[in-house]
Amino acid sequence: MSTFISISSSELRMDSGLTESAFGKTNLAQFLTTDKGLLVKFRPKALKNGGKCGDADKYGGKHSGGECGDFYRTNKALSASSAEPAAASGLFQESPEFVEFSPWTFSHIEADKDSGHAIFCGQIPSSNENPLRKNHNIFLIVAAMTEALKRSIDVPAVGLGGILAGDDYVLFLPEITFENCTNALSKEEKALTDGVYKFKGLSGAKAVHFTRAVIVYEALAKKLPFARTEEEKRQKDIIDGLFLPLEYAVFNIDKTLAAAVDEALSPDKVKSAEFQENFPIEILKKELETNGGHGKPDGKITESANGNRKQETGSSVFSRDDAGNAESMEREKFERDGKLFFEKLNKKIKFKRAVHKNKGLIAATAIALIVTVFASADYAKRLSGLPTTKGLTAAETVNQFYAGIHSLDSELIKQSCRGAEPAAVLNSVSTIYVTVKARTAYDGGDTYTPERWVNVVLNPKYKGHDWMYGLSHLAMHNSNGDTLPTDIYPKIIKRNEKPGPVKEDSAIPQEGDQKNFIVSYYKIITSGENPVINVDKTEDLVQCSFIKDRWLVTGIKTEILESSKFEMAPVVEDLKYSLSKTDGGGVIAGGQKKYPWLPDEKIVNAEKERMKV
Image (tube, rainbow, N blue to C red; front, side, top):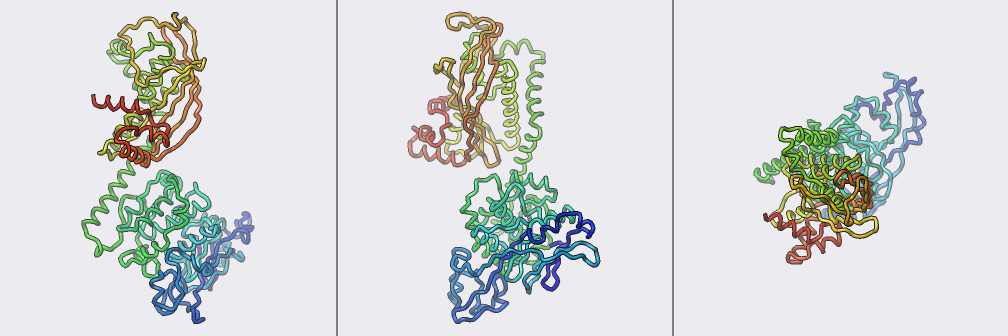
């Protein structure tokens, strides 16, 4: 902990970093009694014979092995003594009276004789251990946070530098006062004291879950999950999930504990509130007590474990020194897997950030590619092979336009429309096209239309992470409300076929004629490192105009009726389960009950036949 906090004769002193004169110009003094910290006291357990435990036997401290046992030992261990058994399945479930919560505030402000700085002062319980020692009694800190959450008690949002752990107490310093005092520190020291333990995008219980997870991660892995001292970069790493999961950071870590920590460190993951509320505190104690681990039997972190941490996010794996209990080949595989995982994750996130940063450039590049092609030497020859809407009805023109969207065919879209609104659709499709191609180049993952994706993932040998993009359930109605036929794979007419004039309602349309249509569909696109299927149920009002000798889409008004997200892995599992129960028939019909956006069975089967060609 930074030297801006000190203890003298049970008095906590926190330096504001401001001279008396500068301090007087702030409003910090008003927080002296209103800004409250949280004091958590762990009281010694009374014995059956009416005796009491001595100071050395208080919770979180050393135990003698006699009648007075550590409260956190299991029932089995306690049964050998005359102490009352505690709950082994959960913390404090039988005896909550042994934990007391009370607000804590600084008592006064005084000027430091040497520096002249304004100092916040307050009394704290006495302790044989130095409460300012970094990583002292991690278990007691986590236990205090967990029990406070169970009782719906607010925990001040302070980093580990603002948490003191004595023999039998934990003190969370007042949040506002502590954060203001850290402003006097260097940016790096402020970050390592407070910032690296918090994510600004969270509040309430979720914020505590995150801070608790960082504390546990650091204690077990000997490194911080998000260690950048530049706040903006660190926040971005948290949002993108750029960290090595605990399961890859600590050799032979308990899977349940690792899952709880990794989930809390990933704000974008679907959270199980019950999972975090019932944090595996007993498992944590065992992990800290492991002989080959970083923790000593009393649940405290050794100096060597904390001394020379490399404070940077990276792919290095910090495993526990328990080689005697594991084969070296297993350890090598573990370290190799961790390195490969992080390298792959880092590559994906770099790609994601590059795409986000250069969205406009990507769209412009895609359009520039089209322009360049048109400027080539074989321009005239290529023109003759371009698609056209000449010879198509207005409805067929609209159908062809959406077929281009579905297949990411920017040329088909371009030759089917004119005007600003359709051009915006073309730009969007061009951007998606360049994005999926770039992704394929980065990690080899493909992007398929929904009907092809279903066929691909239902292959028994499929183990990939391929994305999906396209439309499903395309439907079209005219202005009279009549349902019109659609085909997501229509026959495309090319200019060199020299189609004849179109006839509409037994007559040739005239320049300036217009028709309007309602087009509905599901737009489906996959995104994210842990793939999520994004589905927009959409309805468009489409205007089609007759220009010169053909119909063209000239206007689009889009309304998203409903948006939803689905984790890809469960969708794949459900489809495979449905396949196993239907012997190949009715897979989609069964899946559409839960996922109505899945393409129709007929379209999926037709695509299956196309894939054979």
